[in-house]
Length: 198
Image 1 (cartoon, rainbow, N blue to C red):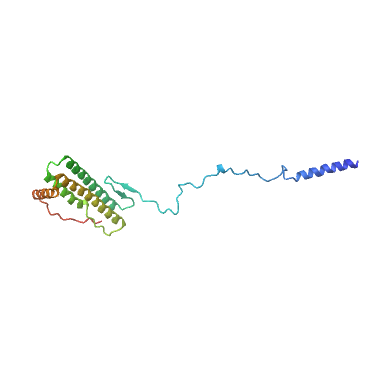
Image 2: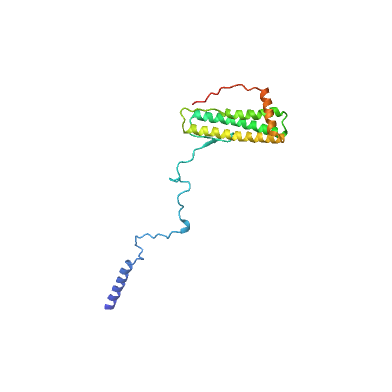
């Protein structure tokens, strides 16, 4: 009798201890699976702007003349950029025609010498500008004008040197003589120049 009582007591104690075990099915703890290092979420996108990168560059409109018109300028300044682009483009086409004529042999050296002279004169007619008052966008425009003058003059200088070489040993003197003959046959009028203000 006593042994049966002891047996029941030992079973009761065993059941009580099983209920306190960490493996009990009544635990409220939620198991967390270990993170797979190959499935780590990606970091911030590379397209996110860097706060230290500074302001984005200004957009520009490329012209057929080979220079760009910046955005964010006044309509008056943009109009002058567009006029300059048209003048420079036409002058580039004129230079191209003269270069092709020299390569094929000018039909008239006097007229060709006059064309070289006229090119030098025309470079100044890219425009005379007097912004009032000067401001950053007009300063940038004036620099573009000056840059285009230098580019055009360098190309005409090259054309003149090629003409002198083609004329032979005394090519420089011969070209000067043809220029004088052209000037005598085509007197140049005296023109007044108005400065463009805006």
